[in-house]
Amino acid sequence: MFSRILFPTDFSEYAKRILDCITGFPGVKEVLLLHVIEETRSPWGGGEIGIALSHNEKITLREEKRYLESLGSHIRVTSMVKISSDTAEAIIEYAEEKDVSLIVIGARGKSLIEGILLGSVSMAVLRRSRTSVLIMRHRVVEEIDGKKRYQQYCPMLLSRVLCPVDFSPYSEHAISRLLATEGVGEVILVYVVSRGESSEEIARCQKRARELGLDLRSRFTSQRIPARVIVRTGNPASEIIRVAEEEDVSLIWMSYSGRGWFRELLIGSTADHVAVNSTCPVMIIRSKSPEDVSTNTPRVDAS
Image 1 (cartoon, rainbow, N blue to C red):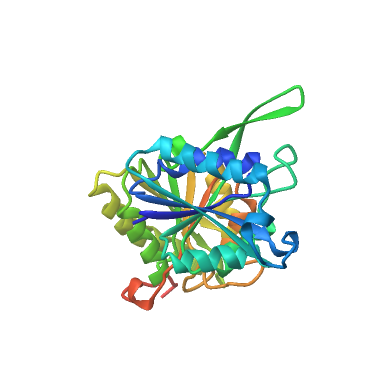
Image 2: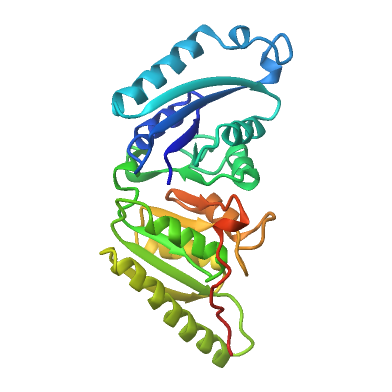
């Protein structure tokens, strides 16, 4: 599953919070720790890394590597520094070069106090990568004297997973990956009816979605994983986020492509909107080849 993980670090406090989460992910055997230096910082315009990386940054990179190694003796940790004018592209290229199974990246905003939004590098990696991406966040647990306190999701990352489905081959691929992941506590399957010419048509789509959802539910319960089905009507991204907050889920697990509303890959797509606006971590499952995706999936329509 996710045996080789790539974690791009910028040495920020926010990035350090994520280190604890990486080695605890099920099945991880190797972590690649990557720091990308902006090309403009190098006096040689992309030349020697030893000159571009400051003394403190060298120390921090070694400390992060040692810390990851201390969390799991069975996990191999490799650190790498690259110089690039495009940080996101350097991350993606390194992920493909090393054939990693997952990129773990933090949601970056102006500051933790103002809220955790999705930064430009994280968004670019999400949109352009052909590798699955886990966007990590931290939850606000209390606010004292105007200062927010944050709690890591990682100890309970798989405790309650929200899995949006559209019954497309890509959605099926995401379901299969979730079924193969160890340590899942509970699954909530959600389908959003986003169109319908009449109330009768919408009702028929809802009924069909519940029937297909119950079939999916049985696949989880057969593995002794509690699962529920929720069918909503409205804007898919908004409803997914709403259900995630109502159910207090620990992770949203979804495909980036699909038959209907999952298929949109431009600004405003469902996956992009969820990744930007969700307050919990989001796992985006990508399919690297057509062989990963089965085409024998049912349709939800009014017929």
